[in-house]
Every structure is written in structure tokens, then in C-alpha cells.
Image 1: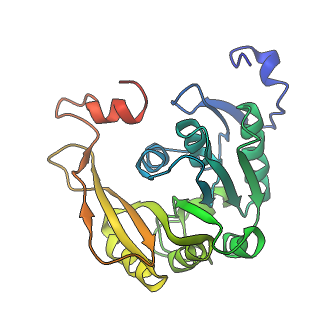
Image 2: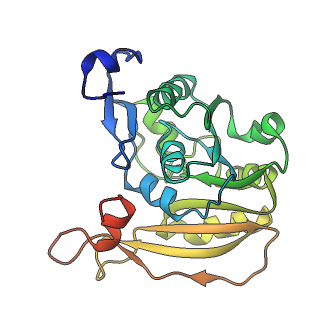
Length: 255
């Protein structure tokens, strides 16, 4: 499919206020709304960080536009991904992005509350769960005007504890749950993981430059795992002169 041809894009219906953007990896495209939450670097980092093996069954909790699910499919051609999104319009848009990239045989989008995911998709059936949770607690930051942005950026009535419990219910014993989250809330996330019997294992701090404090943290946990932590080297996105690092180019597939 030639995505530079407007007649080709018209085969996948675009609604008012939508556009097709480059996912910046392996030619993948994504449909997004101009006035709603759009994917960022955090989605790209998480899809690269998750340890996904051949033929793994993966769940993406709160997929939003479907960016992480699409990127996992791009990175791992044999993985099967179930993307879960409570907002029906966002889920429908993500499904159109799946069709746009010809991966409907590997990525399925489910318009449902993530807290019902195991009940509907199966308890203990997944090898991997990934999530880019809302970063702000309800009432802890100024809320976005649009409903889509509020649900994507603020916890609302779904807490990170409930997200961890949902991930644990979906996972097989030994399965992995990976998240990208603000570094200042890392302790909170790890505590909620522990309550859900998800043991943090791999941790990587994300820094703008080597002299900046971490802004984000990537955490990979294991269901019913042990207590030993593996601290990875920090992920530095930019050199001191502002140019992208070699690691940034590797993650974006531009090495």
C-alpha cells in the first residue's frame, strides 16, 4: 500500500480531525486525532524495552491510538497482540490503523475496560503485558480539556494498582509486565506491582542528557518472581550538543 497516495489512504476511512502519521519505525503508520492524545517517545521506548519472544501473546492495556501495539508488531513479526482500550472511538481508530498496516492477523483491538480484560480474554493466558499508564494522579495536575487527553494523562477511576492487578490476572506464572512511568513515581509503581505479585526485575532510567536527572523509568516485572533487581545502564536520549545519541538512533531503527 502506497501511503503517500491520497487515494490509497481513502481506502481506510479518516474521520473529521484525523490524520495519518509516521510511527517512525519500519514504515508503520498510525491514525491520530489532532485534538486528542497522540503517541510520544515513551511509547517507542516501551516497545523497545519489553522482552518479547517469538510467538509470545501480548496484551497492551489502555492502548489509546494503538501505538505500542503497532510498534510491538513491527519489532516482533510473530507476536500476537491484544490491544485493550475503554474509549470506543479510540479503539475503533486503532483498529483502522491495524488495517492500514495490514496486520489484522496479528493485532486485535478490544473496546473494553482493562479491569475486565482477564474475564474476557482469559486468566493466565498471556506471556507479556505492557502499559503506558496515565502519568498524573486524579487532582494532582491541571486536567486536559478534551476527554481523550484526560483519560490518557490522568488516572481517573482506574488506578495504577488496578492496572497491575489486571496485568497479573492476564499473565502466566513467569510472565512479564512492563511499563514506562514518571521517574518520581517509580516507588509507587513498584509497590503496586509487589501487591499484585509482580516482582520488579529490570529497571532502566531515561535521561534527556547524561547530566539530567531521570524523567522516565522503564520497569519490567515478573509474575511470582524473586526479589533481585537488575539495574540497566541509563538510557541517554541526547548528547550535550542536543544531537540524538546512538541509542536513540537504534531504538528508532535509524542506526
